[in-house]
Amino acid sequence: MARRNKNKLFTEIEVIDAGAKGKAIAKSPDGRVIFIDNAVPGDIVDVQTTRKKKSFYQGTAVEFHKLSEKRTEPVCQHFGTCGGCKWQNMDYKFQLEHKQNEVENNLRRLGKIELPKITPILGSEEIYFYRNKMEFSFSDSRWLTQEEIQSGEDIEERNALGFHIPGMWDKILDIKKCHLQADPSNAIRNFVKEFATQNDLTFFNTRKQEGLLRTLMIRTTSTGEIMILVQFYEDNKEQRELLLNAIDEKFPEITSLQYVVNNKANDTIYDQEVICFKGRDHIFEEMEGLKFKINAKSFYQTNSDQAYNLYKIAREYADLKGDELVYDLYTGTGTIAQFVAKNAKKVVGVEAVPEAIKDAKENAERNNIDNVEFYVGDMRKVFTQSFIDEHGHPDVIITDPPRDGMHKDVVAQIIGILPQRIVYVSCNSATQARDLALLDEHYKVTKVRAVDMFPQTHHVENVVCLEKR
Image 1 (cartoon, rainbow, N blue to C red):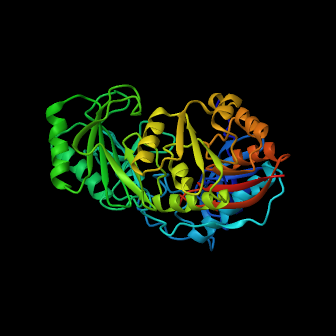
Image 2: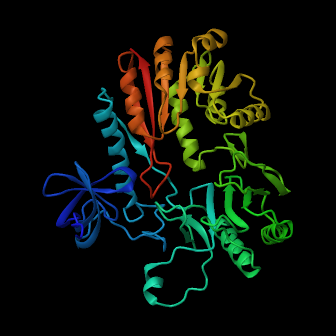
Image 3: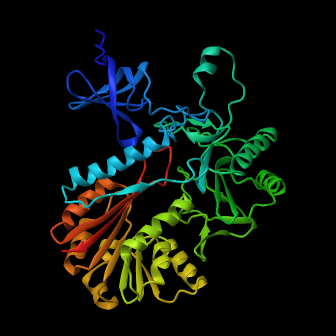
């Protein structure tokens, strides 16, 4: 007996909001929330549901009865398939409005804390070509468009160099032009694909785990430096050097040309040897005269201009007078620590990644900053009373944790020592709200400002200042 299709078609539904992961939000006639993939708040649409849960539906808009005034024409030919810039069809001023609302709603609804008047979100001056790092994947069986499938023609050219189709680990969309990273990013990627195809260099097949070319990473800096990292699956010296020499000849402006030979199951490079083929094994970013060394494995905020603005807000909220001991938790490569060091007596940074701490120490030495110290280890295990006894009681804590927020033991330790001020930088205002609720008995939120690091996406950073009650 055939299984009954439980998916529903809802007609003339008004889209009322934008939600998590770039989805639009509507209400169904039965009161459930509908998360819609391809709509903008203000649209009136027919929605074909694809999934039903107790409290919500997921669906796709299949017919548009009215288009929202918040809409704008996407600039990218890959919009709607790529999945990387889900809000490219929404005017930027409305993107900012929804991000501001998301932050405020999370702090009020999840944190249930008293908030001051919230400073308006800081938008990005550049809404395209703002990223300093992009990673592209090779595939010998690219994702076919609906038009190609319906044409009935044999598609001979199946190589791709681009992005994973959302939710499909083995499907790569071939990218002609990406609007996220400035030139020469597109020129380099397109040249690599064309040269590799013309010279019969094999593209990776994820299912079969075979092929020469695996990934391409392009990093740039505001000073004009460029890093290229090609990840190979097969160790073929002749073919590898053929491609790398061609890249070097075509783009002599490249500062760092490197490669990895990685034949393990996944393409992460953190446990792999990175080999410098030409130039330096690193590039430099600069900020207020400070130089930060970035290698192939380094973490650095991917929007350099907005990172600078974010750090300025964090420094302003720290309100340092010059005699404070500052702890910078989850310090990464120590960028914020060094950025505020000139205003503090001493800064102590803690981070779990050994390579990041190595970079932080090298950067501090290069920048002639002698009032910072960096320590490596799991935050909840390192940030203990004995650590504080050894390094001093902090007057100010700056914390910039990963998306999961701070571990409850770290929050408990902060409450145990009660620094005068906390500056909390977050890429996830929901987990930030949870942590602020735990701190609320002892701290009052005095300043809040969101910073848009990623235009055309739903992601947003938020900075909060907490003062001891």
